[in-house]
Image: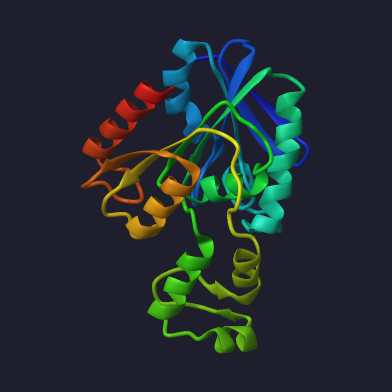
Length: 231
């Protein structure tokens, strides 16, 4: 498959496919990288789409950067990538995983894309952080005092991140959203998902035995079938 590496400002990117007037922007999630888009590109190239995928801070080629995988860093970068896209393609769609979907919702609320395909999207970061605080037995006052608090189950709680999430809820989206969700997703609860879908009229597909990370053979087969149906 034809591909080209490029640099958009400080952001390493890769473009898959033959020249076309239409392109998908692929936004990876935690632990992702730009080449992760190759499988999706193989599917949508048959419909004449190209795919542009980027390495976000602390991922891919940027693992050793001082910039962090924080929304106040990522969102402005995605806006720069968008300016690059609109200067070269007439039709733009979006494909995003997990927190990459949340970053995209923050970056493009006032922009109309042709369609948005979200896999295991984070939709309410304030709720997610609040749930993690409860799990870690951390109060808002304690977090404000200490600023950061490590947890035994993974992510470090951050007062700055918590404030950002509270101050930047997802209020607006201009385009059709299609979501693939695993019924055993531990990151985004079904109540949050259903409320989002109702508010933004998103089309929902649920794999009941799927997880937040689609990784088993059965889950990956389901994912690929969903992508083929919605490309």
